[in-house]
Image 1 (tube, rainbow, N blue to C red):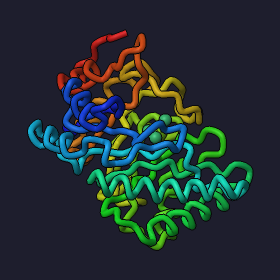
Image 2 (image 1 turned 180 degrees about the vertical axis):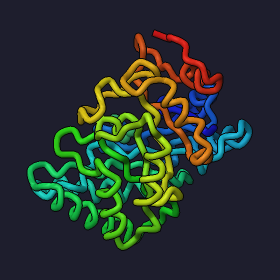
Image 3 (image 1 turned 45 degrees about the vertical axis):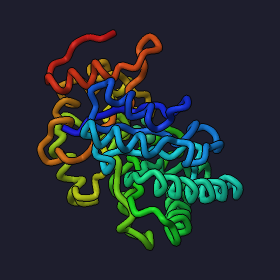
Length: 286
Ligand code: FE
Ligand code: FE
Ligand code: ZN
């Protein structure tokens, strides 16, 4: 099982601190933002302690090919309504790919975007335009993993078919893949109680080899609610057994699983949740 969580990158140790945090949870991978997700201020990659972080990863068995970067959620490539929003998204995403190249990661998770009031088709086509622009000339050797979305507001990318449309119409399909978020697909209306059927559909529409990462979250809301509120494992509508089944599913055993579950009493729940998954047994940590 390749399992980790979202970790922070801050202080003077930066990425080295991220690796240490992941190891403290018993994780063998992790996901991080290159800076605050709600703004565009970023440190130079030379200040991130990349070499030290890589040395510790190597020494402790974290394969950098499983490490995930999450693009900031201010990026909205789907916006056709406000030109500045789209232009900022393209500019920032280009820089983000450069940062990933500098760090040496190969999975960048991206929310496809929200069409605002312009409609699904306009949104999808704008994303394709943006991805083409960003991927045209890039030093980044890895892939962008489009995340499956819950469908809150005007989010696009809520079905496998929509994501397939983006990949098929992009000039660089080989640079794209998918991040499947269990909370999001549940909120989008997929029935996780038969996860193998979901994988069958994923394989038929998108190809299972294009699944690059899984976000493993329970959901506070019922199936199809289009809300996107994450819950701790076993504390939501999906339930521990199903999520444990996803984590241990043989067909996706080489795909990194990342927890994005909420903190409990201001404390990260990841060590306990990873332990539960390793033991395949639910324990109440609240
Ligand atoms: Fe996300
Ligand atoms: Fe997610
Ligand atoms: Zn979410």
